[in-house]
Length: 365
Image (cartoon, rainbow, N blue to C red; front, side, top):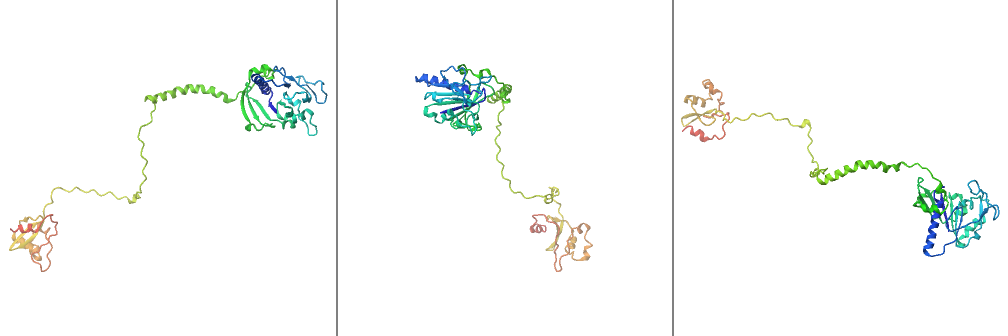
């Protein structure tokens, strides 16, 4: 099984590998089982039990000295012999790009690189550590069973681990990875000579990190006011919801006749109040009956008139007699009766409601 650890320099990739190796030793000790043989290349000052892998320049032979730069890093590709490693061992190679470098299509694959195709036959587990997957041979990347990429967070002692069940060559599938937050185990730094101990990276803190600090004065201002409001409501002194009953829903509007200014009726003219005093009775006429002649008013009461005048009124059909009627009676003088009628004197004046023939007859008694 091949595990790949990648990450930027100082990100914690070697720290993670050493931390897992220390956990394995603790587990073997706890289980009482024999620890596996561990072969390591590239991890300086490792204090855990291990064997150092013998390597030499790829173009040289076993035992040749490896040329290095001022930092002690190899300046050429290296080779190793997996045949010298016992079956069932755990192999850890830091800076694996020196042993399994990228190569062109015309360059043949080294023997130790070809061995990885059948490493499971020997029961080997191999951990490869490098900065980026593309630093390694294409043939090696295709054999990776687990790939973990470590990304440090703002220079803090913590990182985010992205894990895939294959080698994610371009590191573009971060959203499809299993993500784990990881805090650096400080005790592990003492197990090897870590470059992370001597490197302190400075990072600018993101703006959102200041939000909790800014929220403190806001909370100091808001909490007492919210508390006073809540306590006030419970005691009846705070803001109490209105107890006004809910208004019924509006009734649907009924059809109303369309009224326009031109259709509005004019106000009726004022009517004078009717007088409570009865209207005075007026002269109604005269009646000649049984040799007697009587005159009455509209109330049916007898009117004191001279008999001769009464007869003249009854015989008013004679035009020559009209001149003899007193002026006071001309206003109420009735028109002449129809020809052939005798003793008829019609009355056009309004009569009092309730007058009867009995009233007229009573006037002659």
